[in-house]
Length: 278
Image 1 (cartoon, rainbow, N blue to C red):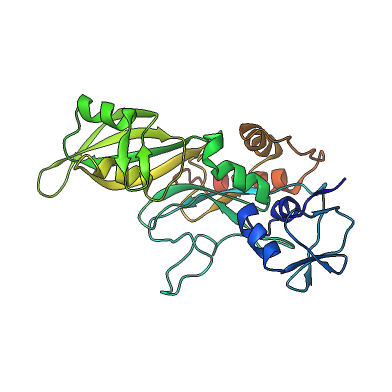
Image 2 (image 1 turned 180 degrees about the vertical axis):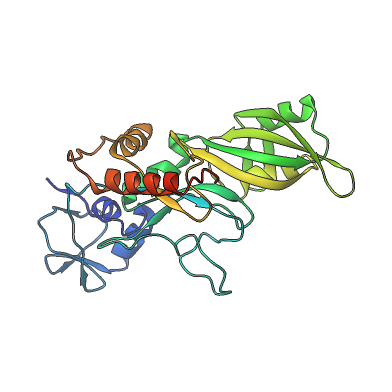
């Protein structure tokens, strides 16, 4: 069965559809020795090449998804010119394709990052039209009242358009800084992932975000078993929940998958050392 070439390459983990459309338009992709053009279709049995290198397309391959607990101080790029650690440094190597970060977190934000080798899944999970929920814990320096919360949920005009939180819930955990000023924790949910959106929403109200952590992305929550700078592989049921969240047919996993085995080994190792901290 043929598919659009950019979709097939995205599913193989080569990049986003938009990026791959640019590659095709630039003549970087060929099918069976013929340079492709935008709109071409291909089958898994075709000989597909990108920049002269063969791309292996496996239609029944089990997609892989990792959850990673990002610490503050890491950047969400594959390489950093300033030599800072990146979120890709600790990930396992792939035999084909590449790890795609599902959304980003800025250098000062910690918490859940998802990675997959399935380009179409990554594209949909990040696309605003699917309204995949992201949940954060934010520590706010400054006074927050009900009127401010209402404004943040009704919508605030930012440089790149109107943005808003779906929910804002105060958490009963108050602390003070060295000057005696109060910091309050809030649990917030939004359904898109623009650059620094959570921080910019709060800063529009003249308060400061001095700690920010993502705790869930769609149906996936970051468990305490995963410490900072560590990853764990999602099991088939969790992977299927992500496909369902963006209206994709879940893959058919075999009874024995490497993902479940990796997860069990990881959990056993962490339990053995008696460490349940993040």
